[in-house]
Amino acid sequence: MESSSSSSSSLSGFIAKATADVNGGFGLSDSRSDNLKGILLAVLASAFIGSSFIVKKKGLKRAGSSGPRASVGGYGYLLEPLWWIGMVTMIVGEIANFVAYIFAPAVLITPLGALSIIVSAVLADFLLNEKLQKMGILGCILCIVGSTMIVLHAPSERSLNSVEEIWGLATQPAFLVYTALAVASVLVLMFHCAPSYGQTNILVYIGICSIIGSLTVMSVKAIGIAIKLTLEGWSQVSCYQTWIFAMVAITCVITQLNYLNKVGTSFILKNCRPVFANVAKNKK
Image 1 (cartoon, helix red, strand yellow):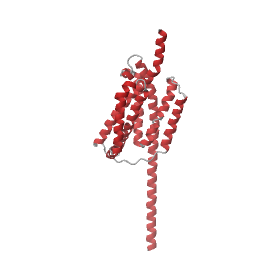
Image 2 (cartoon, one colour; image 1 turned 90 degrees about the vertical axis):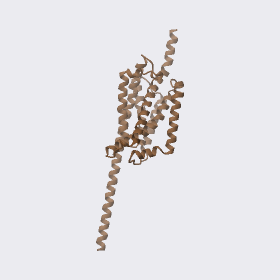
Image 3 (spheres, one colour; image 1 turned 135 degrees about the horizontal axis):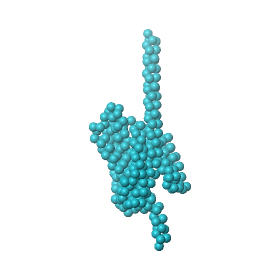
Image 4 (cartoon, one colour; image 1 turned 45 degrees about the vertical axis):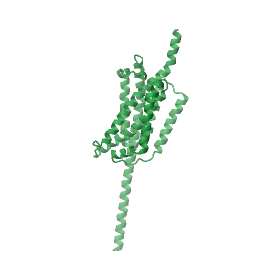
């Protein structure tokens, strides 16, 4: 009897262990599948976003030739169809990027955004006749290497079960200090540096977009998780934190789009100014 009981206990333990292993294996497989979907979507998003910069720049050039440039407060590009084609392309890319955040951790998706730089650089070489110099090629290689290294060595992301949990992480003292510093830096760049140096130094506008982008990633990730949990049956619509994250994301995205347009026209102005000067000199 004891032997039979012992055998039965051993068999039960073996079955339980096997079941746990199988479930764990399926969970790991599902996680890898979601990560792969997220990575593929992020790469696709980079292709759309990178090409949108080129199309929008061509639209900005056309608009700037017939009216005030965006870098000096002009909004004539809103009437340019080519700019809107680029804008639609960017929206498609951003939607793909947004969905990618739902499937995979932010630490995997965010670095892949650097691939849009490669796409823009290659297309600019062919479509805008902006030839890549040695330093530009080196920068593209570093982008690829850096993105690959981060993706390959990305830490596992903790499971989040509600927007309230994300809110708890976002309201920790360390992140609040970072947010305050980021907002203060952006305000200084927007109201002090941009009017004085924005048209001659492209780093001012790039700094604004980059710093704001760090807050955009956090809010978009929160919205993505809220949508995913809602579709799984755990509605996050009634949580006020969801709407706060949504407002933060909308504000950040609009600000980035505004200054991204200024980046394009600032670059055009900086490169064309010597040409205009030579033309004026020859006329004299």
